[in-house]
Image (tube, rainbow, N blue to C red):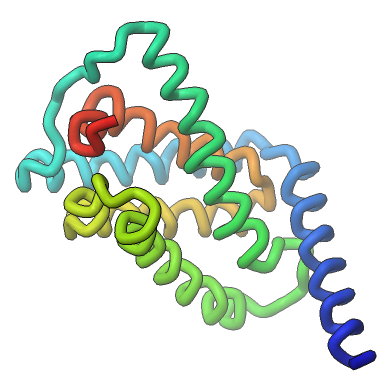
Length: 186
């Protein structure tokens, strides 16, 4: 039993370390540049794929300004901050943790896979109305690419804030301007 308590203590200490490091690491200008570049690259890939497959549609969500601001604020918390806090900060080693790039990716790729799979599981359990959207191959590709670029930026920046901003921007644009609001029937 003392062994289990020691393991729990070490896990708690690591969790708190990762949260503290990620929350107090402020992104540098080069981190923002990388985030902007990768987010634009994601858009350059996914917008044509999404439009070509009819997954995306250029339509403004019928929510009004106040509703759009409320939706954007909600998206900032869930999914952006919550998912990035869990899938990047807690599940991945912080750049301050000394491990090889090879081991970093051996940990990161399975977490990326779980991040993608979490969306259909979420639809099957908590959000059934989103099942068709969250199991759409184009959505899953977008989730995988978003997760990949957030992982890269997190490992370069060490900051929760830049990856949260990336995730927030992508989801907010999709919901408000590319048919996501209608697809999820919010």
